[in-house]
Amino acid sequence: MYEGKIIKFYREKYKLTQEQLGKNICSVTHISKIECAQTKYAPEIINLLSKRLGIDMELEVANFMNIKQRLLHWHDVIIMQLFEEMDQIYYEFEMEELIQISEYNDMYQLLRAKYFLAHSKCNEAFKIIKKIQKKEDKLAPYERNLLKHILGIYYLAKQEYGKVIQILKSIDNTVYKNPEFYYHLATAYHTLTAPVLAYYYAEKSHQFFKQINNYLRVIDAEMLMIIQVQGDTLDEEIINRFKNLIRSCELCNAPDRKAKALHNLAYELYRGKKYKEASKYYKDSMILKDPESLPYLLSLEGYIRSSFEDGYSNIEELIHGAETGLFTAKKNNYILYIHLFKLLLYLLKSKEKEYHNYLNNKAMPMFIKNGFTFLVERSKKELFNYYKKMNLNEQAMEIAQLIVNA
Image 1 (tube, rainbow, N blue to C red):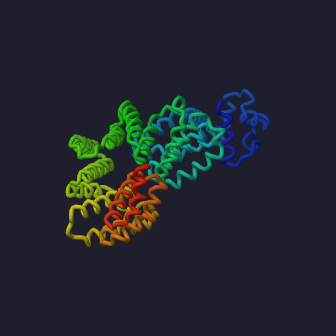
Image 2: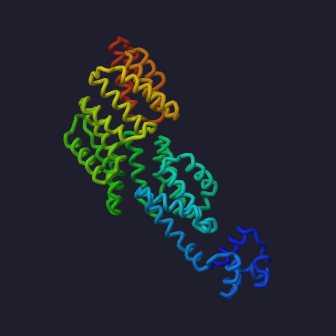
Image 3: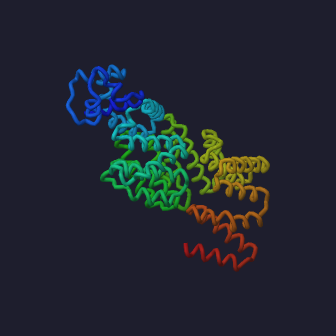
């Protein structure tokens, strides 16, 4: 069944004509019919053709027939974020030439894109996505939904959360039986400050990760769930749940997840106005992160703000930190953090007027455009308080109206 495809692939690879391959073995017509699966053929003929091509046909057929199962296993490994095994399988497939003539080549290309996204290689992933999108209407139902999931992950990395929700909500989960996408959907809802929906989808992903005994992803989902139940005041139960998560991360030897848990604990403490403790946990989180990364800049911004609120005496150190953060943000074109660190520098240098002008005219419009709801609400409150303090009643009323409408 597969022998003809395999013979044609290797014949073309070695730039042989059908006549050259079949010389003293069989006719050109017979070779053509074998390659097109239009005739029966004797095993002896296949053995002779395989020998001339320098291949073990039995092994090639076994590999070819096993491609689908190997791809599904690779997908499971990517879902579980087992990076060492994920990388090993990637390199094995890169050496697997027959994937090019397999009916599962589209699935392979999509999983390559998902693999690159797991390694934060968005540009490489998007090149593959664009090629696959050109033939989206010809994809099998599973692959079509897999493409949607991968697009959702891509836009999540690009911080386009509205697109993430629109795409992931269109997935047909009766065809695409991979509830992992609920986690990515929950993440988007969380960022857009929709805690009920974020909790709902995080819990669905939590159940799935427990079913497949993937404790690292269980930690991810649980962390997302804890964040959604924040109250208006500091909740000791939530603080303890974060501390338990940190211990779980240590037991699982998961420093990246520990860094996230430390950051989220710091944020809880910041909200509870425990600025000294918040600064400590932000700093602990930063130690575990790449200084060029978005998560590092997020913790750095939190560390500087909480230190400033706590009345940290060495203001020059905080200014240096904000300048470093701004330099990194500009170098990597992290637009959000360019705004955040510019605001911090105005704050640290006691440039109150410049701070609020920049907040109103540049930063807040960007926050609104990109759906950063928490930052929008924080900005409105800051502007309202500033305008009231400066007796700018007309501007204060405008902001008050925005708050009421929201």
